[in-house]
Image 1 (cartoon, rainbow, N blue to C red):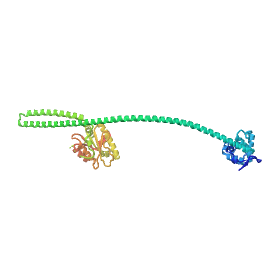
Image 2: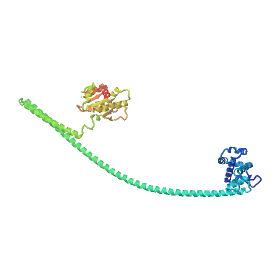
Image 3: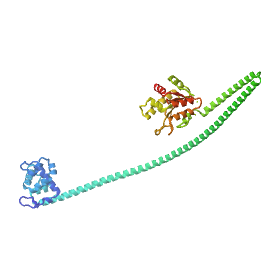
Image 4: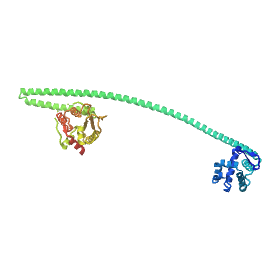
Length: 437
């Protein structure tokens, strides 16, 4: 759409082809004047903009203001009149600002409006080019500074990389030295262990030879003693008069034999201490795992008799696990029964110092522990073997003369272990002792 800038037919100015800068200045001029016009003079399409500030009116209502300026000669005249009345001398064709001069010429319908618009556009282009040049120079300066900064950072990074490489090489050499030293120490330790193993084997061999010689000497002395006894018996049978002399001779021989036996006993005890026999080595019960079977014992009824037997040195307490646990706490699961019983037996072992072995049936037990904790040996019978047979094997494995006490209420087990010389105590009695402490 075309509109002339003069109401009486001046040179036409095409509003649609006005430069953006001139259009923006026209919108600013109209927005400023719109706020001061009487409400009756404000065009209907622009009344909603009158409530805004001038800057907001120009920003949000720019297209509406330009459309009203383009199509309404009365609105253009009202805008020019407001500026002449309220801010005289600012909106004139001779203004120093080319944009303001162009806007005044267009609104006033000046014949030189086209030239003013062209001058404003040219001035705007020059200003824009200068701004672009200044912006480009500013960007060049910023990029130069950034380039110098990046060069500095690159130099620092290279220096840090060289320093890190040198440090890494030093650490690598240090680690190589440490590995070499540790390897030498390891080789020395292995050589020392091999030498110690050889010494131990030599000591074992020599000790075995000495023990064999001592046993042979004992057997020879026993043979001599037997010969002397038979000789004395024959002398007593032949001559009654020599009976007293033979008796004295036999007494002398017995004295010598006693001294010899004491000497051999001392030697054997010394060998036992030297070889650490009976200390940390396996007990006979450790050699029975799940199966096997070796003359009379008796029943222990009261707590006093039980305490007296537990006070005997080297006594071995064998417990029929489930027989005792199911008697004492049948409401628990089997796993909880085992845990409680082993804990109570551990406390008993700590108080009395007795060797304790508890045997459970192994059926259905997954990953069962081989040994208990805190001085209690825990055994599970092998598949197809019941715990009763393991208990009989434990009793048979003990040397003749060692006191063995079996805690069970199983009559068959009681009879069999008593025949082998073991003592028995009912499950209720051992539970009473475990509870009372």
